[in-house]
Every structure is written in structure tokens, then in C-alpha cells.
Length: 405
Image 1 (cartoon, one colour):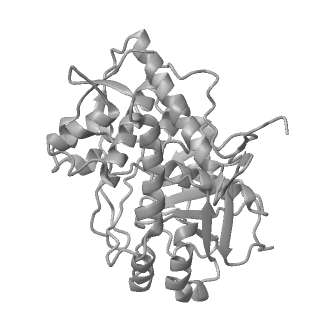
Image 2 (cartoon, one colour; image 1 turned 180 degrees about the vertical axis):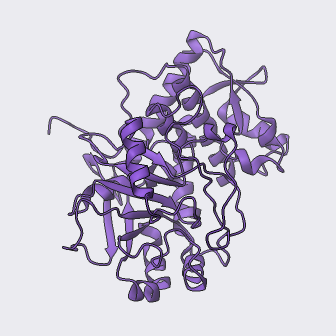
């Protein structure tokens, strides 16, 4: 057995006023881990991947021999006018059907509004548990805009941010017109003049950035966790600060084909369930040249608050996601850690967070999420230290349980 993994308090996360800006980082993972602690970190990675692989094989009451995504849809599956040069927009969403329906009717401020993407298809990607709610809420929008499609993804018992992004790439891989490039964005990204993808010269700028950097992903700008007022038409927005270019490529990105390779989930690790998928992707793709993230264009991505009631029921967020997190916690709760010099387990750490009033209760959906974030910070530190096990590819879905069959 390896040594405990050394952690420390993240003061910005402890302070609930500053927590939103670092909500995925409840702890810091010390750089000075010994050899035996590195072995513990590697074991935490293997356990996370193995647990996620098992969840991906679950289909209802049965366990399959291969991990795979399946999709359901509203909208035509064959559009003969589309070509490899088409650039589809894939928007990842969840629990916001009513908010989105209201916002699309209100104005054209969302970057992916069908009025802003007239010449390309838009695929709104939601989990299968959200599919019927979205189909009902967006029926009017779907009837008005022929380029608007609703896609439901199913990854078995596996959910999470990494799985959703991997599902987006798996779906792109199924498109019959075989696009050379896709845009992927979050549901709340706002249209700005600096990031407008139909702006003259913008496509050439992005494809040139792909060629110059040799990276499969280019961010249309620097992403931020905060929401801001929607800028006026043609209004210039503030440029990012130099230190902000350490941000991962997120929120609004261009991704080039091939989107997946054999036994490969694509560039996003599905096992990063609780929010670390963008950061690990950036590390694995070597987007940081030691000075800044070379994949980011020099603009600022803005997001807006989507107002209205949360969807009810919200089975994906409140049930399926929590079940995934609970399964991960059960597998990971005995992970040995040293927190601010005191030995404990991941389970004990969550109890300590409750005692410190950093969490309301444990076990709970919130504590499961925080514990998953702790493991993901460990995984990120492991990669930064160059200690990822070389044999660990980390494929969750695009794989077979028994390759001999």
C-alpha cells in the first residue's frame, strides 16, 4: 500500500464568497509527493477509470460486453445538402429546457441561436432522461427552425461532465456528412462581436490557429465562471488579462476531426465526472507552452444567466448524476489522504468538511460531488507531475470488456 496523498486547504474554496470561481477545487494537492504517495495517486486514477468503465457497461438490468453511446433525436438524420465542409454546432445542455425555450423566444443573444447559425446545423445535446422534457418545451422552436436538432445521449449508468463531452464527440463521429470540424459550446454562451463565428475572416483565423498550433482544439476565447450582462450589438468587449490565458480551452471551442480513434473516447476523459475534464484534456493535449494556453484566441467568452424555473422533473441532475457520484464515492471513500498534516480517508475528509461547516451534510449529493472533485484534483496533479501510468489509456466507452470475443 502506498503512502497517503498529501492535500491542503484551498482558502478560496473554503470562503463561500470566492468558491464559485474555484468550485471544482476543494483542496490543493501538494507538489512534494513521495514515491509511495505517487503510487497511491496512480491507484486512485486506476480505480476511478475502472469504476467508470463498469458504469458504462450497465444497460438497464443488464451488463454489456462493450462500452458504447447510443443516441435518440428529433430532426432529420440525413441532410443531403450538408458536406464535410459544414461546421455543425453542438450545444451541451441539461435541466434547462424551459429556460432555453423562453430565452430563444426573447432575443437572439445566445451565440447558438438558430437565427445566428442559419447556414449550419445545431445539435442540442441532452441526456436521455431530459430528452422528452426538451422535446416538449422546444417543439415550437424546432418547428420554426429547420437547422435545430435535439439529440439525447445514453452512456448507460455513466453520467457527468466528461461523459457529456465525450458523447458530443461520439455523436459527431456518427454524422453521415463527416464534418471536418465542429463547434462545441455551453448552453449559456453569449454572442459577442469578438467571438462571432460567422464574422468575416473568423473561420480562416480558427483553421489557421489549428494549423499553426497543430492542436485538435482551439478556444474562441478565454472562458470565465461568472455571468455578465449581454453586450449591445457590435459592442466591443474587454480583452482578457495576460494571466487569464492559463485558463483551459472551454465553453466555446472548435474541434477538428478525427473526433475519436479506435478504442479512444476522443480528447475528453469521461472519467473526469465532476468538472476536471477540460483541464485534464488541456494537459494531455499539451496546450500550455509554459507561458500561456496556445489554443486560446485573444477574446473573452461571455455567458449569461438563463432565467426561469428549473425543469421538473430533473431526473438527470437530481437522480442519475447523484447515483454516478455515489458509486464513485463508494469505490473511492477509503483513499488514504493527509489533509493539512492530519491522516484520514476521503470519507473522513468529507466528515471534517461538515465539522468545519464547509459542507452542510455527509453523505449527501453535495459531499459526493466534492469528494469526486478531490479525486480529480489528485488526477490532475498526477498528470502535471508526469506520473500517469503509461499503460493507462483511460477509455471508458469506446472499448470492449472482453477483446477476445
